[in-house]
Image 1 (cartoon, one colour):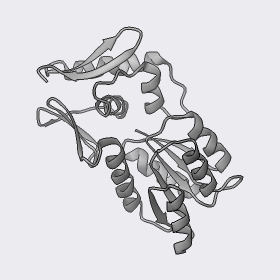
Image 2 (cartoon, helix red, strand yellow):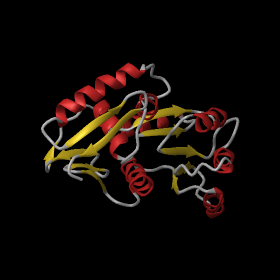
Image 3 (spheres, one colour):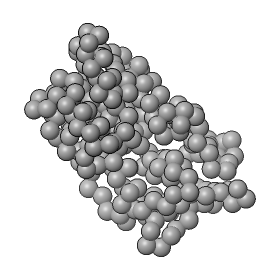
Image 4 (spheres, rainbow, N blue to C red):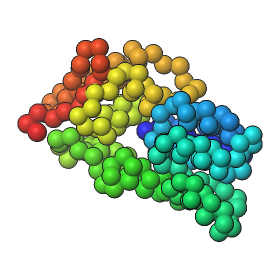
Length: 223
């Protein structure tokens, strides 16, 4: 899953980004509100972590513009302001959660997990496709109740497919969820990861079906 992190304090941004990447998420890191507004209007994210005190355009305005476009993307606000009125303002504008600085990275990770669980899995802790199971809390896949060993990229691709049951995902859509803004990637790279995943799923009823010219669909035979 791809997360947008917008924080103008660069050391803090780096620490948060590294922690999230260490949990397997793809993270785009920006440092001002104008860049954030542009990214949110043009890129596809699972969640945004948005600092309030941003240069050029503050976090409240970025959030307001996001909601005005009808985008219901989950948003976690970060702020050094602990006043109730600021928290109320953010929540009234459509923020999904609010975390005051300083904070522990473990708490941030827990809140991110909770927001993604609600938005992607409808509150469930697991996503299933036959004997293939993805646990959002541990961010691990299992197949036939055994751990499935995947690289971070393989896990990202499979995570997008299992979160969208019955939906064909094009190479471009998969790439937009898996790779960050600072990464150059061709659709052919997705083909490589699909090939590797098929090898790891080949002895199970779970398969990745190709719809020529359209993309890929994850399904399990026998229901």
